[in-house]
Length: 501
Image (cartoon, rainbow, N blue to C red):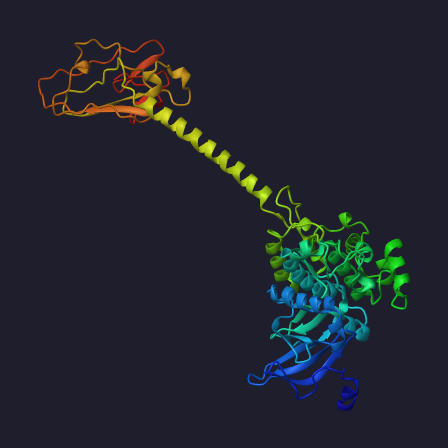
């Protein structure tokens, strides 16, 4: 647009080129205008930072709701931190009384202008762009903000520092918030009076066409589905751009969307099913959240959307249940919130699960402690009726008595590891039954196998130890009784040939 053309189209009451807004922003160019306001390119007079200034026209001063919507946009956007939302920098009022909003200046074009110039976009590119918008809306919905005017013209394609595409969601001017629920349901004037319709009809859900007040974030799911359909086909799913408002509303309320495969023969059937679900006339039959919508589209995106999908998934784990975004009802503090496709959408049901899991773990730990205590106390009981033998010769020996034998088990009771029976048949006068000298140690241990060792004092005249008398089925092996087919070796009866010595 030439300088002369801009001067002719510059709206009345809007700061002109060279004028200073807010004592620091110098106006340079008219970027666009509408029925209620205009957007100017300006620059900070000290920092040189380019900004976009949105100014309401003087004619809107007679409409307090227009000013309220303008202020609502500032409040909504300032609460969002996503890279995919145009940042608000400043807010003020002109001497004429018209409010203005200072936002970051974006270089690029909106998706409506892009497809008008270049035609339908590649499917993976279109899905990538819509997923970036989903990230912004996921955060907005998490804070109870419903956009209500999503369309390709409000999806602005800019570039990051590295040149990668960056989609920004614009114009939260008619968004609604949970905080406004109580105000809008009262008897006073409201920005969304019952029966009022705000938005662009071609992209509005059936419930929004009937009543803009009673919509939740599933209305944004519908609008994003319409946007994606248009971006990959360059036409609307309902009616056409030549239709009037009444005709467009009739198409949306009564007709099914156009068949995607007839307009785009390379469109996957799975993607068409996703679009059909997002544009179900009954909100309950759509995707329950923007996160679920994004998850369904993930297979059709490029690898550039990996990080976007991960961020959406993290936000969705604690996203606001859609009941709390209803304007007609304040947030509910009871009940079980519905789950999104990415996991939990509330903290109440998940808290109960954590308590149950904690109790179960505590019960298992207590049971383990009880079993351990029982085993320990049982293992500490003294051995009754068992005499620990000692060898009075120079050589030392050890007699190992297994727990099974202490309790009277035979080798057949423990077939895998047969062990020697206690030497109960030895007489009290036998050398094996003599008490050890004071320097010897004969204290049984509290392990699975109880052992006792004793060192006899040197006695050259001591008689050799008598061989034990073994019961039937056992034979003497190295001075110990072992089952036939076993020998005493290494302190235990092991498979081998018993030797009688």
